[in-house]
Length: 390
Image 1 (spheres, rainbow, N blue to C red):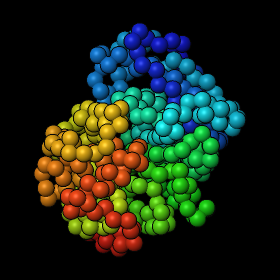
Image 2 (image 1 turned 60 degrees about the vertical axis):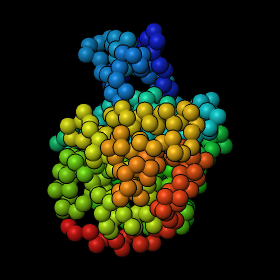
Image 3 (image 1 turned 180 degrees about the vertical axis):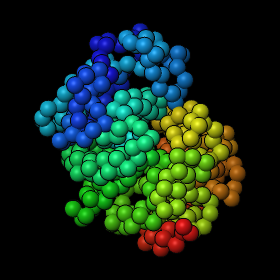
Image 4 (image 1 turned 135 degrees about the vertical axis):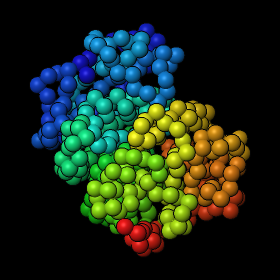
């Protein structure tokens, strides 16, 4: 993470805020350790991403030696501490695009500081999302043997994430906030939103979308958490995969209760109750991935990131021009499991709806035309998920 001070020729610049509850490292090349810090720290970070012709979409290309090769490797260009709330407000206002959207990413288990920052920079670049990127990186030791420590570190970081989301939502320059979390980070995200709802009687309405990718969440607990969000929760989108080996292990060490990221959205009771809750589920089980654990498909699949990026760049609504996308991705989603073709291609475009309210409305209308309704109530989710066999 030691800054190189310049962009490579033809490289892309990604400016983001990195917020962390990690302890600072003595080594400036590392910046932050996996231990717990005394409070929330923010930095403005600039990342250099190699030219598209020299890297594969969905992949972070790590330097094999230092200094990094800017034509082939991801590199840190600059790191500037944000020491006051006023500095944070100023940075955010200066980087908000015309969409006025902010994307907050929370990484998962077994991630070092640089893992989280570079992965998020890759997602932002490859999706070409028109957002201000903010990564929240909590104290993970980056070891598969520290699962329990990492889980407690998410609990340690709940207040800080809640405060960060609150401050972003209160910024008058911001119009909409999307929260995207992966793996164990989904626990931190959902718990922080739950705290916000309990503290304020609701989740801030600017937080309109929540994306949970490979969520390492007990299905029973998630049902209870979701109830606390009230009558007008954000729109939730889940990325699930039944061949996720990391979540299979998590299930085994967590009382053999199913993890939310492994559910079959075509099976009852999940399908009916998630539809009633208005939760979009994108099943990536059939999607091939270079990840041996099948735990990072949402970010590593070139098809998924290209789909998001192409649609966002063009500002397209979900229309019949999407036909065939579902088949090409080999994925299904809520409301499409009984039909191949038009229905599948419509729901596969659900990730686009994450960012664009106009697209979201058109997406809902198309599902209704296909005979599938997402619904708007959440009352029965807990009853159904709570009866899942253990």
